Image 1: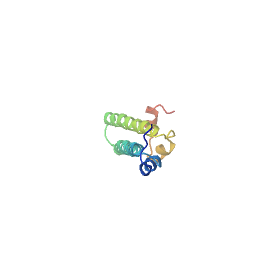
Image 2 (image 1 turned 90 degrees about the horizontal axis):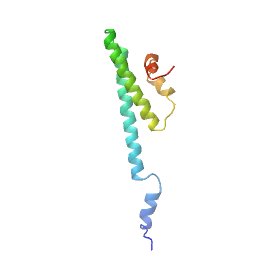
Image 3 (image 1 turned 45 degrees about the horizontal axis):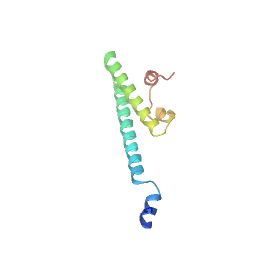
Image 4 (image 1 turned 180 degrees about the horizontal axis):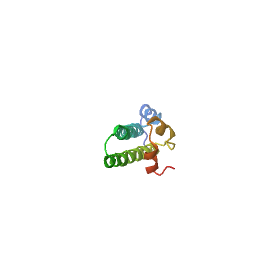
Amino acid sequence: MALRPPKRLSTALDSGPSVLDAELLAEMAVSLGRAGRRAEQALTRLREHKGDAGARARLLKAAAESVQAYFIQRELCGLRRHDDAIRDYAIPREVLVRLGAS
């Protein structure tokens, strides 16, 4: 004999995304937003830098690492193409070259 939940509960659980799916999607969105903010901040610091070459090299490395983390997070969310992010964040060529772009 199989046990089934009451009809009023089974239709609520079966229609639309489950609670877990909704929480996973929300967490993915939060993580993607957080990674995007970090990349944006690192790129802003790189753009506004007016100091010596050593400090610029450290800022360039930090920007490349944060952009790479952002790209990985995008890919985990199913966004495989990064052309729009490169354009929207105005990611400089020197950062992309550090990520292996030609």
